Length: 253
Image 1 (cartoon, rainbow, N blue to C red):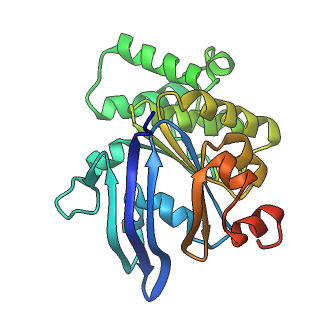
Image 2: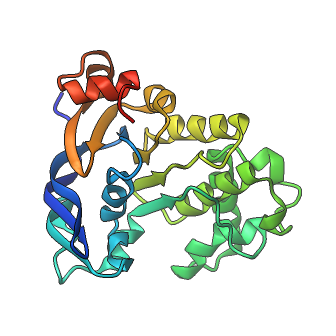
């Protein structure tokens, strides 16, 4: 069965001023899989991730060449509505950033922004996405309490629920468990494994054990270059490139 491509990266290069951070990257990202981007610090992992929803635009002196096609549309075309593109993406950062409002209002925020006012529908959305992120049972009796009162791990799951509530197609996660304790990290990982049935999930991680637990497809970057990519079993069990072998063995980092 042919694998559907959700994002196609074609000859993508990104420059911050004179520094070239990504060098001519071409890769097809499969639909409804967990794609894990690995590589040492400073190799361009986050820049590649931020290219998928054009967050690289927010950097000073940035220059992008090449294409990123999402559902066949080049998101770097000057005529593209960036807000519409970003609505397709849910973003989970390294540190959770709940909005300064209640748990309920955090999840309801996106649907309200897009015009939904029906309380029953909002109630249903909040419950549904808190359940999706394994948070409902922990917070159902204090939905109107400040989100800031949650633990760090709960806040990260809340941010995931808030992102899902606007019904994205793609989840982008940049080191999403790096600030969390092992139990909270496991909860986030379990959520990803459930959610991949409905979403394309792209994760940046520096933790090889996590990549091996989660990845269906692996992208290995080194100093801005795409060294190897492919199904996780192939890359981890039988890497084609010597540099990939060395990275997996911990010889280079």
